[in-house]
Length: 351
View 1 (spheres, helix red, strand yellow):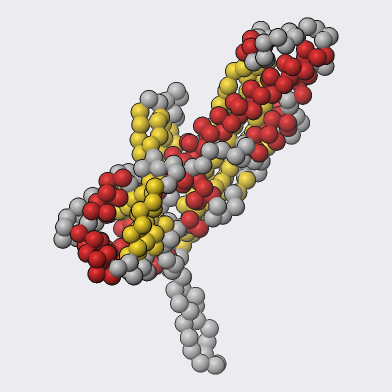
View 2 (cartoon, one colour; view 1 turned 90 degrees about the vertical axis):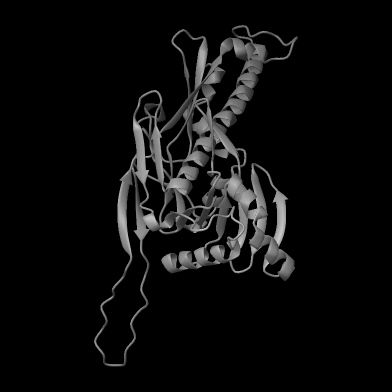
């Protein structure tokens, strides 16, 4: 038996599921709020909640029951999550080069030499699997950023031209330009933040916990005259100015009493040679992580055996090319970040 054949889909998938990807701010923030949903089919089924509950009417003993009149409505959506399937070739020549100088070359029947090749192949698989997982997680981060900045996921595959269009029904009233921009000296940013927070509470019944600025919005916030005046007069009792440079483009700007902590996220991504920002420069995003959930569509693959369906976040396998010179390492994931409460997102242009 070829020792390299030990790397079955079961082994490779178990390994790839254990890989901890490089930190991604949005992914970690929203993934930790709710456990992921692993769909038993290639489609995922989820509810998008709009509106909110009304207060229950009160009466006196003996009064007839009040009809429950909920302003909440639920739209059930069925979506096929985008497939991310990556192929990383590993040539036999690359594996042989990976061994240290002086080690015996592999000869048929030479167990010692074979074990060196297996070890070299295993090391290459581990490195390449992590690179592939990181690439997938960067795309997931991009998907979340599109939900946050537009309320939708829209994407055109550059190779096939096929479109991904998923709309989470964010109300038009939740996407607007501030009546007074932060760059103006007369703008009272503190009052704006308080009013927007109260608007969020009226729409959702809970307070927002996440305030994310783009780079230009963060600069305008820190320069704003009203914010600096509040700092001078309140000495930190209302606004705690504590800018902190964080990792992965995340910086804490300040904490506002009765509002929350505001951060900036200026990280960039590269996609097909072009670059972009995860959070648009001129915008403030107000939301709450508990309104989001990650869904993963099932993966169909005959290499799984008689039951070719896998429920999980990642699936991995390897195949040998027809000429026997190359093994192809595959990693697949069918992820979909979902905004389950449409009003729990406010997208505000502030610069």
